[in-house]
Amino acid sequence: MNDDTREFLAAVLDAINIPSPATFADWEAFQLLLDDRVLDAVVALTGALGEPPTADWGLGWHTDYLRKQLAKKPPTTYRHYDADGGAA
Image: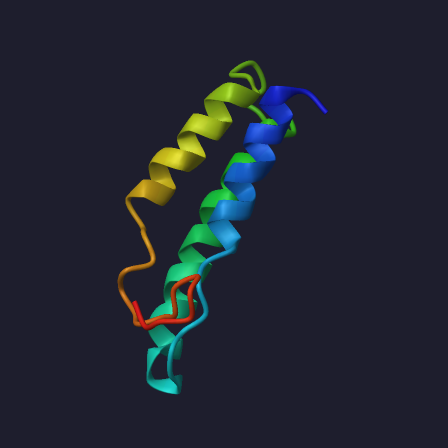
């Protein structure tokens, strides 16, 4: 796998792999954010697969696009557990 492909796939994984909500009360905010990030990933995947008019923009462009969209939507709208198991 080349570096561009790996970076693109890592960005797609970042889009859909957000922390689980800490409580049931946080579920709705988690789901709304995840839905929004999945839509960004679908747009990037569609473009990367050559759907017009983005067919000539290249994989790097789609990776950058997705990363920029995700930066606008960090998992801070709900409470969740961090990697060490503590509430974040």
